[in-house]
Amino acid sequence: GDGFGWRGAGQLARGRKAAPRSSMGCRCLVLLASGALASASGEVAISAVVACSGRHAQFEHNLPSWLNAEGLGELVVVDWSSEPPLRVTFDRALGRLSAERSGPSLILARVEGEPSWVLSRAFNVGFRLASGALICKLDVDARLHPVFLRHHASLLLVGHSPGSPADVLAQATRDVAARRSFVAGDWRQAETAEALHLNGLFLAWADVLRSVGGYDGGALPAP
Image (cartoon, rainbow, N blue to C red; front, side, top):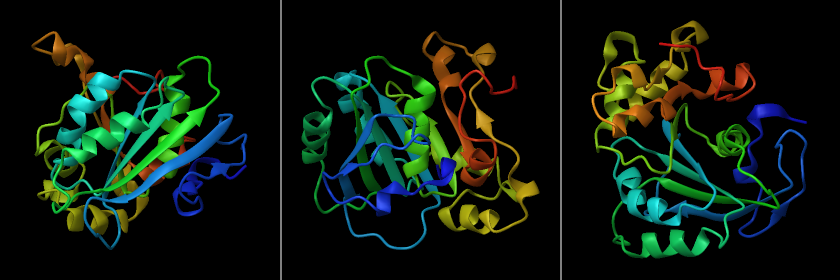
C-alpha cells in the first residue's frame, strides 16, 4: 500500500468507486463531491476533517460553522456507511448557503459496507484525502467559533504569528523540528459539560501525522 499519504482526491472522478486498498482500511471508497463554494486556487494551508456514521441532524446543524471558519481551505467529510447516506443532507445544507460566497474546497467521501463505527479508521481515510499543511480533526457535534482555527494555528507557529494561511504555509517549508507540536482539547480543564468533549478535537501538521502512521485515538499523549 501507499500508506497515509495516498492522495485519492485528485484521482477519483465524481461518483467513481475506488478499488479497495489495504492501506485505506475500508471496503469501498466513493468520492461523492469535490469542488468549492467559489473558485479557489493555490495551496491549502488548513484542512478540517469530519467523520460520522449517521448523526445527520448534528452534521446539518454544524456544517455552516465549519465553512465559516476563518483560514479554512478545505473541508473533508467521511460518511462511514451512514443509512441513509449523508449526501442528501450534505446537498440540502449547502443549498441554504449563498452560491456567491467564497469558501473552502469540499470533499464528501462515502465508505460503504462497514457494519460498525471505527473512529480511527474513519478519520484516517479523511486524513489521507486532505491536502492541507495543517489538519484539524473535528467531531460532527462540534460547532466552531469563526476564529477557532486561526487562533489555535497561531499556537503552532514560530513566534505565535497570527495564523494566516500564508503563515501556516511558510512554516510548512521549515525543518520538521518546527512542526513537532500539536494542539488538542483537555477535558481536565473543561468548565462546562459540553467542553468535556473538546478532547475530540486536535490540530496537527499533516506531514507529522504521516510520519507516525496516522491517527490512533488512544495514542494521543496527555497534555
